[in-house]
Image (cartoon, rainbow, N blue to C red; front, side, top):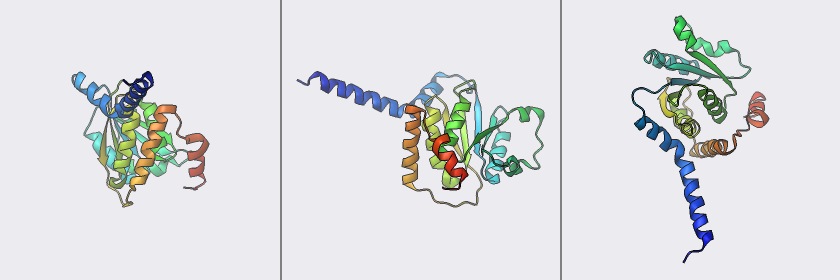
Amino acid sequence: MPDRRFWLFCAAGASLTVWWILPWWLPSLLASLRRGEPASQVIAVAAGDFRRTQSGVALWHLRPRALLALMAPEGADQAMHTHGLRGVALLPDERRRLHWIRTCGDSVTEMADLTRWLKGLPGPGSVTVVTSPEHLGRLQAIATVMAGDSGWRVEGFASASAEYKPESELRLLRDHLRAQLWRATGWTGRDSLICPARARDLF
């Protein structure tokens, strides 16, 4: 007959498993319970390349209720990233639905900053992350862990891009674990490690 410690171990393992998979399960559950469109629709662009911004804006124009969130590095000249908007005439309503999220360009800190911003919106709703095709799988996986934990349904949209940088499975695993660490502790190393290092071009 198993003793008490065995059952405690099983209960702890089951709880950890449920916690780990919650970001994938919760959005689907809420979507099945919700009737109609989600309370908030967001298109979030990793705006380090003007092609991403252009692709995000094109998708945004197809979704007239959606908010457009452009994630740009802190301290960067905003004009560097807005040139993806040149030639685009924004109506007053569109300007109100355009938001800038200041971050430092690291994928995990970008998604942490985005998730904190999403919590201020009516929701949970749906968020579509826009980035280059090579980067999309990793960014969508990180966003699913972080935003999915709050019930947001995460989709991905591949932008036009000239990067052609293949992604490593090790980077995907590393950032997935970092995203789960953020869920558990709220820590990404953003201010103490990641952003200062990127500001000095250390990586």
